[in-house]
Amino acid sequence: MAIKIEMPKLSDTMEEGVIAKWNVQEGDKISAGDIIAEVETDKATMDVEAFDDGTLLKIIPAEGDAVPLGGLIAIIGEEGEDISGLLDGAESSSNGSDSSSVNVGKEKISEEKRESKIEESKSDSIASVDGRVKASPLAKKMAEDKGIDIASVNGSGPDGRIVKKDIEDFKGGSSSTKSAADFASAPRSFQSLESKEVKVSQMRKTIARRLSESKFTNPHFYETVDIDMKAAMAARSAMNEANEVKISFNDIVVKACAIALTRHQAINSSWHDDTIMEYGDVHVAVAVAIDEGLMTPVITHADKKGLAEISAETRELAGLARDRKLQPEQMEGSTFTISNLGMFGIEEFTAIINPPNACILAVGAIRDVPVVENGEVVPGKRMKITLSSDHRIVDGAKAAQFLNTVKGLLENPLSMLL
Image 1 (cartoon, rainbow, N blue to C red):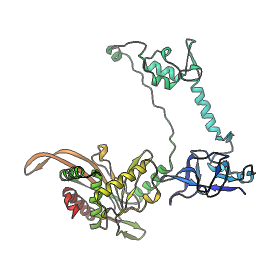
Image 2: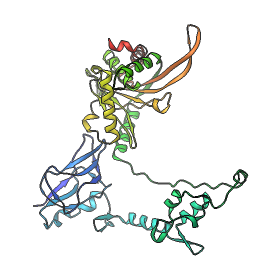
Image 3: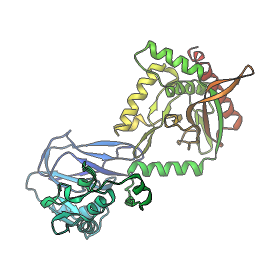
Image 4: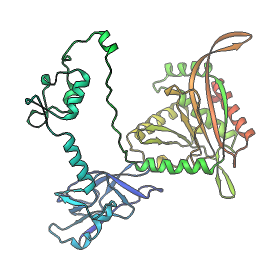
């Protein structure tokens, strides 16, 4: 009997998955435990495992197709087995395409995609330059804009046709030499960027939904303090000279916040209908930027870990996040979140609370500024941090007290060792 393989639930908030990659082809022999596909969920790219032996008789969705939970993605069974009864309606419903979809070998292409391919082919059709040089219209235009003699370009397309890439890669000189005066007086031609529709990833959909809910459901308020970072910078330099594990400023901020959260439990909490849960454990999420948005791996029990351990764990989790290899359990259970944009030169910003946390801390860049000390203006190293708080849980005074504790720890980093 043929066996259906359906889209599994790979995270607690997953509603559908996108086939990122098929690791097998139709006709392959499959054994239980084989990883047959990689699926993009709302949190990470996860492996899909086969639980039975057999031959892969049919792949339903193509790479890039979205499939709802429980949707049919493949069929395994005995080689040559009739599976027509299992396929009724499966291919048309697996990715929401209509009946105009057609099969070309193993590739399923909708009429819309076919039309797109035809238009693309038309735009890249061969044009003749003086009846001798073959080039696409786009290549001709690019060569004209760049002042390149198109006859001097070697074409890499069919029958020696010159295409866009050939112009981009061309290393020769222009067809004529122009003076600075020529460029100043001649009208300049600019190529416009191509407008395009970007497909929204599962992660981006989830980020949009969760942050919209947070921003419009949780009454945010913001408080900012400016911190003297000279002592923290000196302490970091001393620690990095003495240890193989390099400590970042973000690691120091994580540690300072973790200690402060043990002293201000109201910040380390979340809203649950008509009750507030104040957590005894401190699990700090650190926002990591990737192409699709932000991922928030969690440093568990951050208050009980030293700076070297926090540094090593943060680096490992950040690497997994950028490779989309974080497991769901590595992104769950946070009680507080830190978002640091200082490395991008951002001096100050406000962040949207990462639900269900009560607060999120936005960390800016360390700035070289003049400051007054003992009545004299001297060079200073300052950093602004801004706490976004859910006003249902946290009042202004409690947020201010927490920020002042973090400020005190960062300005006196040795106190974190006590």
